[in-house]
Image (tube, rainbow, N blue to C red; front, side):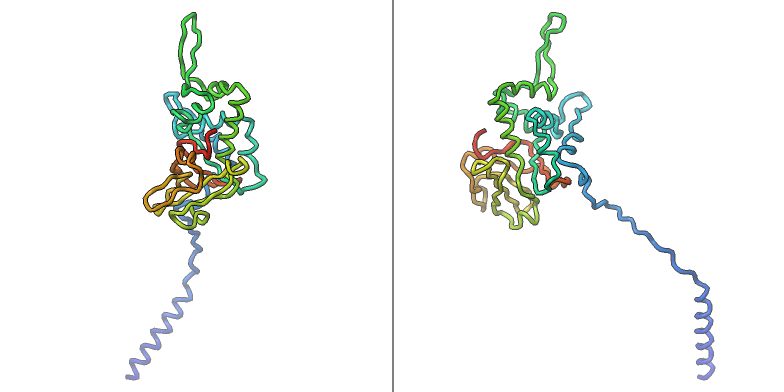
Length: 248
């Protein structure tokens, strides 16, 4: 028994001595595979819009881009509203190209025509081509049309920071906010459903009451296409159709 104790003691000493020769473990710098920073967090809403207004490879407008929105903002002389950094308490409902180019969409609302083409005289032959976004906005050529365009853009800027959560904390409940249009005509409503999609100015849906807005808002209600684009002057959500409280 005594021999076993001596043996175990000798073995323990060997282990202790040999462990003194082990170097310290190198510091491991963990690099996560997922970048959790906001990819557009150093941009204003205007800078983001400008960065996403390229044409498709065939030279046509990509419906998901913002060529028309950028041109509309410049035509309305409202760059400062989208580029301001005095407050980040803003929500920008960004209208993609699809929101401009259909029946009842922005171009139709402000000009009375859905056309985005232009006809020119080429060597005495009338030739039709796709107009640039800036050329389309040149059709906003009266004070009435310009005022209507400004009101559309103002209604799509909310004077609160609206995210899915925590802003729309309770699902299937309408939350009302103010846009840059003052008074009741500038009210806008958001709802987050259980599957996290956001609806704007919606009418009555299954198990959900209609939003607390006039019926004129229900005719142009929309689901947000893409959510939570964080900018340094607010947050953005993308729409493929314009929304309204009352007709512009």
